[in-house]
Amino acid sequence: MKLAYEDLLLRSITVEDTDDILRWRNAENVKKYFIKQQEISREDHLNWMKNKVETGRVIQFMMLSKTAGCPIGTVYLQDIDRVNRKAEYGIFIGEHSFTGKGYGSMAAKCMIHYAFTELNLHRLYLRVYEDNDRAISSYEKAGFKKEALLKDDVWVRGEYRNIVLMGIVKGEGQ
Image 1 (cartoon, rainbow, N blue to C red):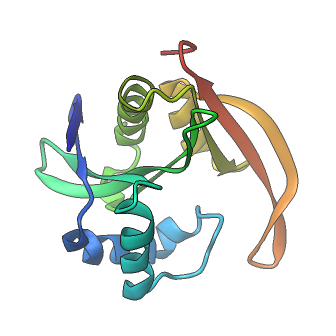
Image 2 (cartoon, rainbow, N blue to C red):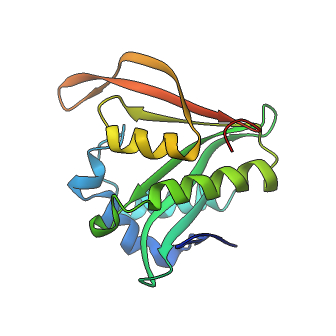
């Protein structure tokens, strides 16, 4: 499956993307923004593909720059709840030279549209570190709103960190 928005192309992730995912996900400049900080192995990723993506529990796309013609990151919906029509949104841009250029907002807008129109979801939510101002700004540009501050929610690198819960409901902010 392929989706497009401005200079962004999203295509379904494949096993052939494993090397890029591992390189990006285990890079310090990406990993530091994840709530789960541990490195992932090839086996971890292949298990994710088999048990989450291939079963439909996660919908994941590779992000490609149309202009540059190369993969730059990934975006996904996880914990898809078809009864309550909601899912958790996640993204990371692995190619550092593409950060700060609007691809995060483009990806979020594309996935919001996909989730609400194609999947008939009612709500998307995400979790982000309170001090990740760049990500919060990107999410707000796409229509997500801050809903809660979770004080000392996670223990990361020897300290408790605050998490901002953000969400968007179908029909609001698009």
